[in-house]
Length: 335
Image (cartoon, rainbow, N blue to C red; front, side, top):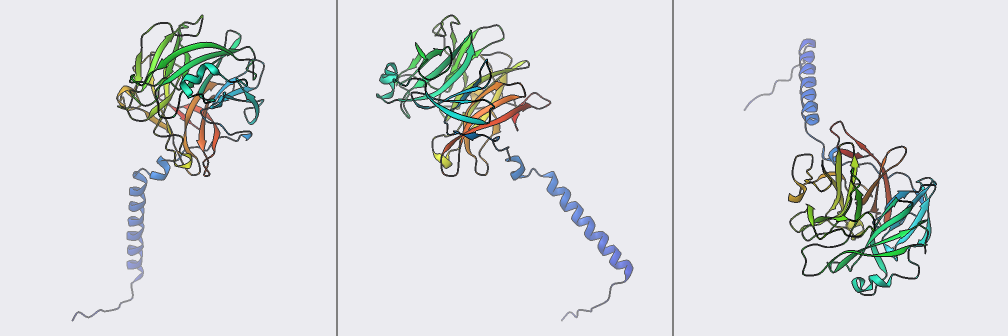
């Protein structure tokens, strides 16, 4: 049997032990810091403070020429809100209070119209929006214009593009982008073969030709809600990956790629083509912020602004607003 002999350490041995323990702790701490923290890697800013009527899905926001902001969002006949300060929001009604009968062939006579896209050009508001039913690609995108953006002032300008069940794309989630040369384009798409781009006639806002370009896709997987935003020398294509419309179980997340040209090719930070599933994540669910997506971007006097919806713990879709900044390599991030 081995005998244990208890001894009292000397002062010098205590110092050596203390030095050894400090070295072990320092090495362990350095090793921990060298590894990326999953919590830190997944941390994103919470939405900025907004108050009032903040229930939205697929919001779009535009700054009004005389001050304040106009918001349109998915809802019966397209819901509208206004704000004077980008913080307090108020419901003002719907774009088509009398209904939008021209959309009924695509909505099974339903009144819910989806994912509007607002812009102010040529002294009037332009609004592209989608008509469909959930899970179907029998869908259409229409254009309406208004001198004021107020409920009941919107005029139907007609069908822009449609898709049928025999097509490999889905004509929803429109976004108008005007390139640096003044050419008009419409990005759209959901699932199927992904995000498409068509040319528009600036005089009418309607489709200019029959060309259909592919700009992003996930091999039939969940990608939708495209939004192209020009900043510096790049066009940035924001999209939503994964699944919306599941309340607090939604997995939407906002991704981005960029290109020197409006029609692509778009690549992510790692150089992966967005047509091959690429995308750099800039916002995802965290804490009580579930499934952020359905995004849009616009320039304000203080920052570029990222607008989106997210779901609260109880499943309610709410308005998210964050500043959008760019790192030293020109990649956007929310804060």
